[in-house]
Length: 268
Image 1: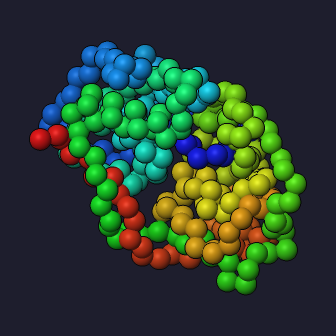
Image 2 (image 1 turned 90 degrees about the horizontal axis):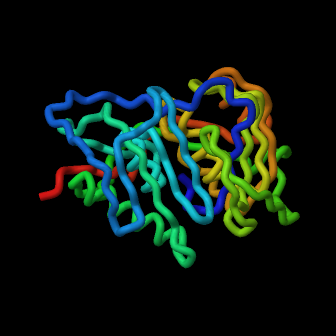
């Protein structure tokens, strides 16, 4: 999910959208969730989606996800990578859920996010807090400044729509500012027929690359503002990093960093 203003396009997806593969903990307690309406606009129920499929739809009047396990669901609602969600071993990691919210006309993105957070904590009887932990990550750096192929964005560009995991919904011009397009994206692994970015921050660009990398990528370029750029075809993580260096002057280096992790525990 992006509660921030951004537009992510995935063009030429070659297989059914699937959830991120997560580490499986031994489940000693299974939480069975009956259909529930909370707050009263949030509806949570066991999924009706087939195995290995999901749907994410975010629009001006509705927020809906289907077929997500609890870890991925929390990551979507809190707008973080799933690797930054720490679930207890007692949670059933195989159960999947559908969650929908009919957005009130006057609800801001922050209001929607707060409603969803409260609904998840109440429905699953959880307490979710933030804790800093040391993690191995990649840093996106620009040791010599932006490369020649990175151009500061000067013209206002607005496109309506949000494409996430094979779902398309309308967005207003104010909601969709940054646009990052992946062509010929594979369902797993680091491979694409190319990336183009319009009016994109490098922090948001790093976030969009995270799902296909073996570590989280953290923006450390210290380059603020929005940019237009392209990345050529790549077939592996190593090839992607090499293209970032050669084409954009962006160097990826391994590092140890303190990261904010969501700790999820049963409510007292």
